Length: 67
Image (tube, rainbow, N blue to C red):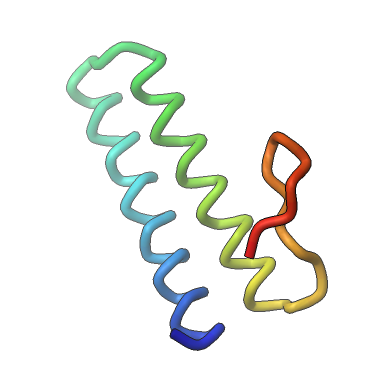
């Protein structure tokens, strides 16, 4: 996959996770479930932005570089 396709996929996954968080909130799910979906949405969005800009490599919580 090329960078444009990868970024579009990651943006789509971010929107999906945001939707899942909203649905979990509406169902009254546990706060940790909602937080997990929100965190995944943010991670996907950061990766997508990183890929689309090409300027900054994404670094995960362990400090390792990831593509």
